Image (cartoon, rainbow, N blue to C red; front, side):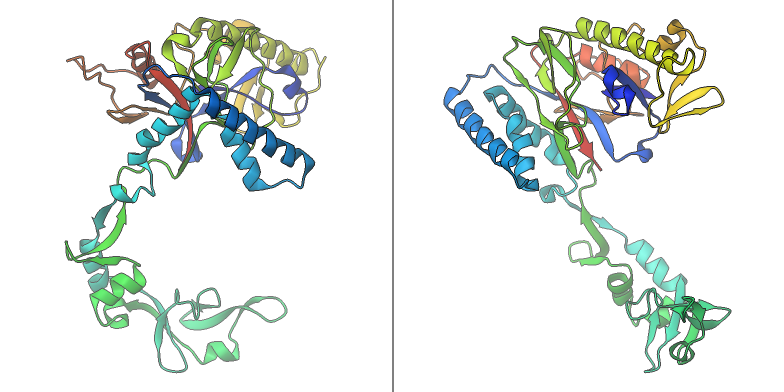
Length: 403
C-alpha cells in the first residue's frame, strides 16, 4: 500500500485546499500510474530567444482559446507549451522520451515475435467451438461476422437472439434454416492449422521462427504518458529556482490552483538538491491537521456540511472507495493512519522507479549497482533508499503514465 498526495474536488472539501491521501492497493484497479523517473542533465544554458518564441506562441494560442470557439487540439498544445517555457524543461521533455522509449507499447524497434505455435497446434488438434451450418451449406463459427450477435445455440437448436416485439430468443424462419453444431472440432472447421491460426486465433506467421504469434514489446509498461499529468503537486522548490519543469497538466486539473507555502512553487521536475523535502513534510502535516479539523466539524460537531461524495459506513467515512476518516479518532491517530507523521526523509510515493538501468515496480527488489549487498526492503523503504542513493544533481521527474 502506498500514499499519494493530491487534492480532491468535492463540494465544501474543495475549499479546504488540503492534500488528501489516496490509497492504492492493486495495480489492476487503475489505468494511470504515478512514477518517478531520474535523468542526468548537465548545467543548461538558458536560450532566451527560444523562451520568448514559446511564450509568444503560447500567448497567441491562449488568446484564441479564450475568444473561442474552443479547440481540443489547441488546448492540448497549450498544456504542452506550458511545460516548455525554459531550457531546462525542454531538456527534461527531450530526455524523458529517450528514457521511456524502451518501455512503450508502440515502440516498434523494441518489438519481438511472441511465438504461440504450441498453443495453436494443441488448440487445432484438441479444441472445438460452437458452429452452425448455414442454408448454403457453409459451416461457420458463432463468432463469424455473419452470425455473431444475431444467433445463438440453445438446447441443440439455433435461435435468433433478439426477435419479435419482445426482442427475445426465438426459433424464427431464418433460425430454422440453420443447423446447430455444438462443440464442432477445429480440425473439421478449418482445413489446415495455418487457416485456424490466422482466421480464428488472429495470429500471423513468422518466417524466421516458422511459428504463429504476434509482435510486441515484451517490456511494455505504457501506451501514453505525461510529465506531471494527474500529479502536478509532487516536488516543492523555492520560487527563485531556475531549473525546473511544470510538466504538462492533465485535462482534469488544467485550471486547478494548487496552494503551496509562500515563496515556493510546485513543480513536476527538479534537481534533487533543489527540492525542499523538509518544507514539504511540514506543509503536508499542516494541511493534514486542517483536514482532520474539517472532518471532525463535518462528522462529530456538525459545524460543516459533509462533502458531496462522502459516505458513512460502520463509523467510517469514504470518498469513493477511499477511507478518509474514522469517526471519533484522535488527531494523532488520524495523522498516523494517513502516514503523514513518520520518519521518511522524502515525503513522496510512487508506483514505479525508472532510471537508465531499470524500471522498478512494486514487488521488485532494489539493488544499487554500486553496492555489493542486496537490501531486502518494503516498497516504501525502496523508494526512500532509491532517492537517497541519487546524486544531488540528478533530476527527479514526476511521470503520469497510462496502460
